[in-house]
Length: 463
Image (cartoon, rainbow, N blue to C red):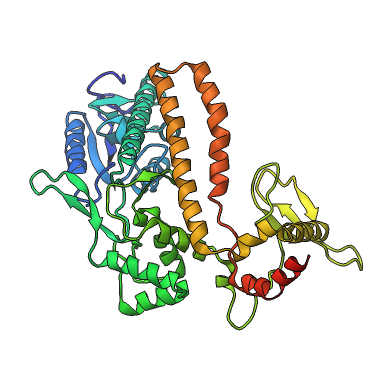
């Protein structure tokens, strides 16, 4: 019976004999980045002790999952648990052992997989000194409850972590991975994190990248120079060591991180000033974002690059919101092949439109838009004016979002009524959306600007 501490498995042919049980121990620890397996070692030792009083139970295999989460938000595969399922399904073991149910999983989906495998193979489950038989309804129910409780604990821990991260973000304190260009500062006595400061070496490299991008140096050239100097990159290889393969994308990722401008980011949005020293000014950071988005930087010096289609991955499906892709119709007979824009997102495929008429419409619209002096100024305007406007818009957006969050928190605490919160949202949400639109980078194409200044402005002024 599952509720008993000792379970003797009897051989049907020999009632007085005890059938041996080949046991599989599975141990797991969520936080074990150094792979020391101290917690895992304790689990294995206690699990072995649980097997000893049971007649015929011998440990045939031990599996370990170090630094592996078992919740639904796990980011890494659990190689040990996957192997355990395979051994159970193959019939090579008769008993499955964990220190407690949460070591097997904090997700009901994991419980369902384990239960199905053990039921099919007739494998018993030993945990917390008790043996459970999944073929018994009462044992299956009790284990289901234990896994449900473990899942609830995982949700509670995640909610607590999210609140902690947001609190640190609101205070401008660092959290998570150390950004490139910085180093962490800890209290020498307690080991408590005090903050982060510019790293003397990598911080200067970030400043160097910023100066070179502003001066017009291609990102690819900067990446090649760092590669030639043998500088390690922020990326980690599978074995935890830094890689030395600098690419244009690596440089862009560093320079597009608001952290280097002394800004705190929460869920991809800047929410205020950080508590650490910026490596570059917010004005230079904004100017760099504009330069990195310049499409002329992706045109080879030997000539222009003609795209195959005008709107591929730019036009958006009105049904699912995913980008449309360029596709070619299959011709019927001697009919020419037509280019179409189609939604290729799974479970949608609802939008499909011939390319020629929609491209003609877009071109006419753009030309009409450019003919307006205010719009044309975005192509030929001075950088400094746009930078200052962008900084003001970003600060205004942060202020509006803070006001909305304070209203939401006030409603949660009972200080603001739900009706008042609804009125605040109706007023602030459109203002926030408008502020976000003001952050959009204007068109900056140096080649187009040269052509426009050479001919376009003359025609515009004469009209």
